Structure formats: structure tokens, C-alpha cells
Image 1 (cartoon, rainbow, N blue to C red):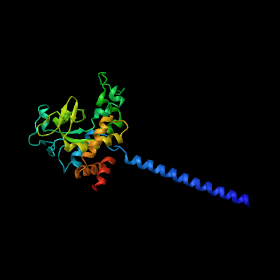
Image 2 (cartoon, helix red, strand yellow; image 1 turned 30 degrees about the vertical axis):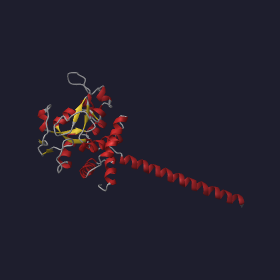
Image 3 (cartoon, rainbow, N blue to C red; image 1 turned 90 degrees about the vertical axis):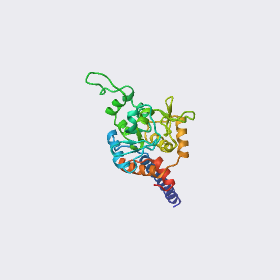
Image 4 (cartoon, rainbow, N blue to C red; image 1 turned 135 degrees about the horizontal axis):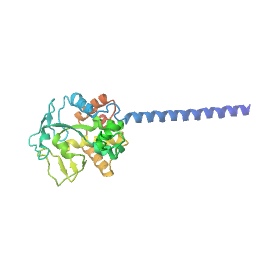
Length: 266
């Protein structure tokens, strides 16, 4: 009788332990799935042209203002620059709306082999091999999704977009603005954005690094973006923009969402 009781007791302990292990496994699986869902990148839109059209017509339809200089633009993509704005280079593009990759396409694109060395499909009819954006866009679907991610696309005055190129952001305290009243500074392959844009920029960089394994910031760049994230909090428009893109792109931006939720703007 004692042996039977002992076996039953051992069996019950085994079942209890098994139950606890199973619950732990289930909770870990759920947590893993939740994490994956939160960090899901763009897997909906893989056309850069389509992304720009959606942004113009469905996201910025009631907020036609550029990121860096606060210039307004109309449905015909014509820019009205702020008073005092000047451009000494790319003057023809100063009245043109362009869509800026805040994290430049080259900065994540060069992590794709098609960008760096090309691909067997990246050959012209004359037999000339090509690389860079043209090849990556043609061959690699993952690159196209990254390039078309609307969380990383902002309206900009064409002349500002052209002069910034693919330069990383930093602080340039000894430099003067390159655009008159618009406090955008560019020097020695570096750029300092106006204060009004720094929070948006920081959270975009943090989002891109979290969403895509192909993109990593340097330690100094990450420190700067974390600092700007804290110094320049979200506003109502940044939260509204993120909500619109989340709905249209069917993917989340957990960086902006968490900041907006913390101040009851989500």
C-alpha cells in the first residue's frame, strides 16, 4: 500500500512539473510571436513609386509640410518655401517636392550583395554590368521592401534632399545654415538637421535598426539618436502619421507607438 501511495505521489509531482514546463513553453512561444509581430517590417509595399503616391494622397493629404524646413506643398507637388529660405545649389529643385529616405537607401543598400557587386541579372542589353540601387531594386525583394518602407520616407524640398545625399546626421555647431532661414547644415559629408526634425529623425533611425537586420547604426550614431529621442518628444502629427502608415502598410512602428502611448497620443 505504501509503495502504491509513493508511486501515485511521484506521478502527481511529475504531472505538476510537466504542466509547469508546458505552460512555460507556451508562454515563451506567445512572447516570441508577439515580439515578432511588434517588430514586423514592411512586407506590404515593395514599390518605391507606390509608397510615394500613398504618402502624398493618404498620409500627407491634410498635412502638406516638409520635414526639414517646414515648407508647404500642394497636390501638384509644388513647394512654397518658408520666408528667408535660400538655395545656392540644385536651385531648380528648390521648388520641387521630393521624398527623402531619412535613413539613406545607400546606407542600408550596400549591405546587399547586389548593390556592392551586382548580379547575373544586372546586365544591360549591350552586356554592361551594373550594380547599386538599380541592381538591388531589380533583383532583391527584401531591398525593395526596405526602400518602400513609408516610416522612413518624409517630404523634403528637392534642393535639401539633393545636398544631404546619403550623409549621416551629427552636430555641426560651428557651421551656418546652407538654406538661409531653414537651419539645415551640411559640411564635410555630415548633416545637422533643424531642431524641429530631430525627434522624427531619431525615432526613424531607431525603428529601421529594430525592424531590419540588414541595417545597423554605429555606436556614436545610436547614442546621438537616443539622445535626440529623449530631447525632442513626439507631437500629435508624428503620432497621427504613424497610425496612418501602420494601417496602410500593415506593419507597426513600435518605437513611435510606445512614445505616443506614453503621452496618451495613440
